[in-house]
Amino acid sequence: MPRICTALLRRARFLHPLLPLLLRPCRDIPSARNELSWLREHILSTGKARGPRAAKYLWQHRLRQLCLQRSRGKPLQYILGSQPFGELEILCKPGVLIPRSLPLLYSLSNPRPETETLTSYLASLISCQSSKPDNQPPTNFRILDLCTGTACIPLLLHSLLSSSIYSLRICGVDISPAALDLAKKNIEHNIRHGYLRSISADQISFAQDDIFKHTGSAWRSATWDLVVSNPPYISPLAFNRTTSRSVRNYEPKSALVPVARTSPTSSTVADTNTDTDIGDMFYPRLLHLAATVNSKILLVEVADLAQATRVGQMIVASGKWEGCEIWRDWPAAPDAGGEVAAEGTQIRVRGEGNGRAVLAWRGEGVSMLGR
Image 1 (cartoon, rainbow, N blue to C red):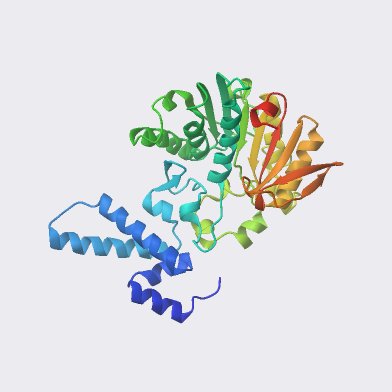
Image 2 (image 1 turned 45 degrees about the vertical axis):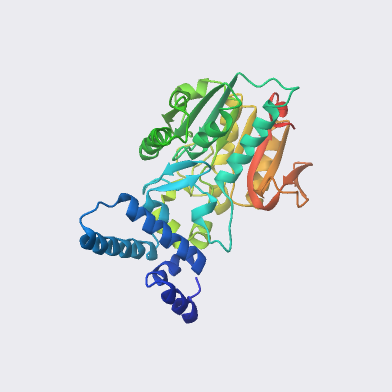
């Protein structure tokens, strides 16, 4: 990472003595000023009054301590304890991957959409079709989220779909007890603050499971209309070369980089997988599970267009889906144009930006998505 120029540091120090500390992770003054404002608000909302003089000293001392933590690369979401995600507020803690959303993760000069954008766009497609006069809204709609983490995806889907679909059933699956504990707290937190309807506590459930193992978990024997997943998809080399210091030092690597296995359904570590194979490790398994639970729609997140193309090729080669397309960063934007070749056919690439997700459909999923 290039050094910050002296002129920029002087400008930051002129604006506020703590801004230079935040320039290191933020890289630009507008983002640093935003983070300073959020840290200040966090202290004011969580602090306790102890008299005017004591309160002022403690407030300034606490703000400096938090700025120092941030300057060392600690994610802002872990410091604040939460992350905006659509209309929700997702609790965050070390050991659980931070939801990817626009407001906090990226520099204001280089905004980049992530999970929130994709989830919202998927919900808009389903809501739009269910609200059309010619279509009968589904009375029951079942969603399975594999590798659920904080449960940001199922909670946002419930928030966006519950007004148009009478009965939702959503299950989030994760291998991590810490992630599932936080997921349950996120339901309670968002209901308590009025961000989620109280019925979501009955309609959203969770299961601890290793999706690579053959277990008798109830979710495996059920039928699901939609399977979504933001799995670990970063290859070992990409993790070391392309992720930020903050991600490498603080976020759980197991939620980002797959553990190499001898096969997509094996729990045995392999020594012969290539770097690309390891990054793609979850997708064959996700396709297998989506077929097993008779999913009509599948949406999986990916790292880039190259990985999206490989996943699209897996979908076409399986012969179990009627169609698929790749979503770029901004899937709702006018198409930049383009298709990618896959197993003798062409896959449409929708929107603008880099490849960010792959959508597949079959059966009733065609009408559910308007495809």
